[in-house]
Length: 454
Image (cartoon, rainbow, N blue to C red; front, side, top):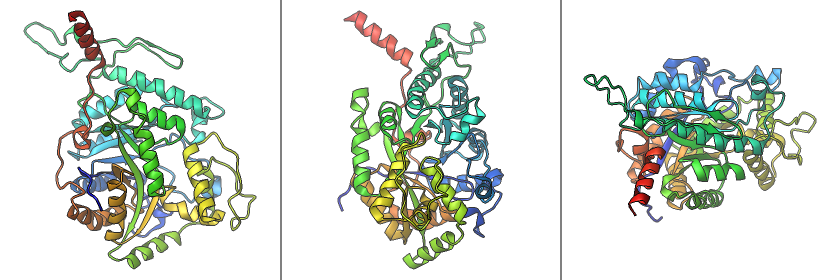
């Protein structure tokens, strides 16, 4: 296997008790993990000791509407991510802190202020996972009767990012002189008022937080639809994505990286990190036994409701669960995941039951059940052959699934020279090898001076 220069990046994708839909029922899991700071502190410090680039928290501003019988069998509550990450910033030092916040049901000024604050509190480790909301129940909590149309969600998201990044540039890095002798707190010419008026937002600015330590917190995106990929090509610095095969991963990698040039961006300034659901044992047989134990905990109502929500919140109750996955119309939900699951069902001729059992852990991401060598082989193959720049690790249970990956897989990756032994930098940007963005106002002024001099 040929060698690729550099080392792969790793994110720890943390869901309270773990990614498997039945994780909270596992005897090793803390059933109250979703509201336990000590639980998150333990796993954040474990991931940092292992030198993960970042930890990542998904989020939704609504309880998923799964029907009362199924919902009662879910681990349904969790802490708000920016609040939680702000607390974790005080008990960690190097690991990146990534929070999911929707552009559909938030306002740019609020978001810009919160992430700028998190970046200062953490010493330059904040990242924003930009989503447009897949959970249609969120609409009902924000003055709407139905979800915003898919294309319009991405149109709003593009303008949202423009406003947020503009607000982060409100102050130049050297603005705050705090000169007691002159009585001058900041130099007024280094303050910039955004004055944005667009289709979706009217925001004057400036932001009442100093420019973030990283310039801008790292911009992360998870959408893989056509509008999602175009938005990623323009704005994203990390993409969390889902592919089942190396060929699909390579096609996505080429597609999105190929979009960067028209936005004046270099391919290395975007890190593509597919999700990986690893069930690891010292032997393959041990891993398979661990996986069977989790699969046996899936309640049929939970499995069916998970599938329904992931293919567009459609009702499958009238279909035979041991029959084929029916042909279903496109919905207003997450289109890329819907298409991925339909393709998986057709490719492997899966029944409805087999499909929900298949996604109960990985939720459409790549599932790996095996020994440390088995799992490292796949990660190396995808990294070496440009299917990924790194991976977002989705532990099946927490803390046990992450402990297994750290103890068993990381030594194998390090033996192959694929993963760091120490952090390279202090900020998340430095560790991800991403450039610190210039202040747009300063860049514009410099460009004007160059033009005037010529």
